[in-house]
Length: 418
Image (cartoon, rainbow, N blue to C red; front, top):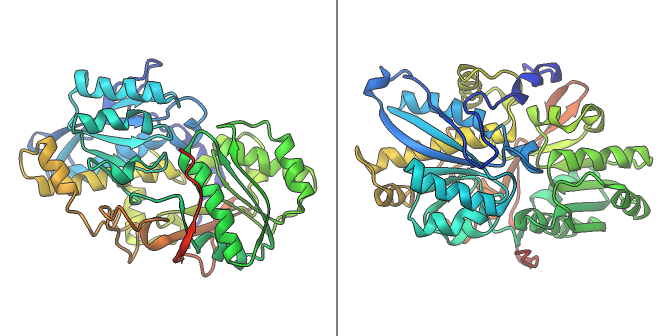
């Protein structure tokens, strides 16, 4: 099986090739030409706003979404659509996110928004009030559950609920005492850290350290590291940005803390190159959870994904945000097809509201997601995660964990952070 070398990842770090972004929250856009379906003039043009954390603390896991969207436009062209996208930088600030959304509606006249921002909740009420269809990732907050115009590629996740998935995997890796860390400003991050602790407990793992209120994007990790060392932890879970995660891992290793495993939800693939010069050393043996098939599996869906990335001018291992942008375009196209030849905001929302079998362009493998189940989604499609580990200069699939799936722990919840 072909493996990607870390030396190839630098190409994936420069993904703002599709659009230049201004510091004021707006940006120029891009679009793909004709794909397999014919000439560009034959394609139906759709204008989309892309809300993302291009700068600020969340940029390390978000800014490469632009490359994923660009790759998605090649898929869209094959399906008969020319996606013209306008990039809006939230600057990792909820107030700026709102300003971006207002520009999308009043100046850019977008037909839909792709959201890949940790602060999208700042724009959600405005977009909902103006009946703008929104597709993207629900990793910022709970508004995806209640807003009927918002549709997540991983489902309307209830991060206050708990599944057995994380605990099952940590137990598989031999963890006996866990530390879990999440951000204070991001409801989903904070709740995910607490939920991981409950999942671990259900698997028979004790929780020695839990901080679900860590400052967003901070790399001042000294007190955290000492707290974890004193708690004698041998497992680590973090729902934080790569720069924070790698700083924590480096600190733990400098303090001589030996981990059975560290489980991260960011940092896979090209994101690793953004963690600083010591990131690769810090990430040795680390487990990365991916909500889609990793490219290491070399399935038809991952091969097509890589092909579209190459068409977009990108090489090397994709990032989580690459996946997010690409799959978001896929969901949008599925909705456009059902909305008819001249979709309106209302018809597109109606079309998206009737999708119950989303495959993420095949990147969910044999699984299908009901994106309109706003009651039972906790950990993505069937509560499944695909696991890889960094070993040397390559990401390796984890035996028995591609994917690892769990069940909802009935009656177990964590306190809402928002």
